[in-house]
Image (tube, rainbow, N blue to C red):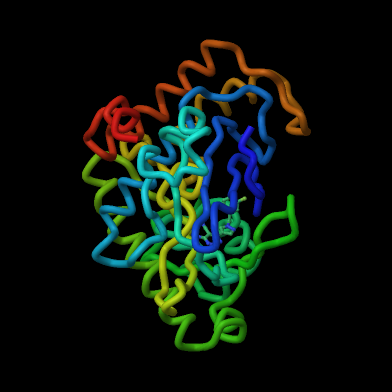
Length: 296
Ligand code: PZK
């Protein structure tokens, strides 16, 4: 147990206060499927997602500064040293930001809440789209589809660009859109080189004490983005998820009604799922996952 003030708790992550200017973001090995956090953890999932985030922050550093101070536990403050073994590989010491109250999403492909909006309105977040698009279709151009955080347990609500302008002003809204599209562009280009499609991604940005807009949270992980194997891409149906498909297939076959708590996963499903997360790390970064654990 980490005896620090808990600032926020997500479905599978926790955020602790370290001191005035710093936070600790801790990724658990929990996994959510069909919006339910499953009772069985996937060993190393939290470390894979943290290692991926740290790697992506480096790949994006010329586009946008980020909140990462260090993910090396040896460099953590003395107050965290009692927890070093528990935190190694799956935590990031971050600068405290004032978060912008907008979930910044970029979509290059149509699926999920974007598909639902499209089917109901012919567009997403007020942006019209061509007729005839299907689940998984490539969009004619990447779209910024902002959302606002809903109450705990609820889904974020897609909002129009004008609503973002009303909430944060025209200047910041334009900067959020520019940075979100730039991050998606860089991320999708790198992923495509490795045979992976980046369907969409969600960013959180905040201002540091100097008023500079900074990328926060985790970035371009399988929990904040949809990654699809490029070779299986076929619009007109749900695309297989790079990381979670094996778990979803097993859950579908199990007869589970998708209500909490969800079934325990068998060992082979856990092991296969762990392998997919590690494979995602290694394919994207070109480095071994073990090297990440040694580095942290
Ligand atoms: C912050 N979240 C979302 C993430 C959770 C909740 N650097 C920062 N400074 C201030 N606030 C945040 C961050 C970051 N990142 C992020 N909420 C606040 C969130 C992870 C787990 F429970």
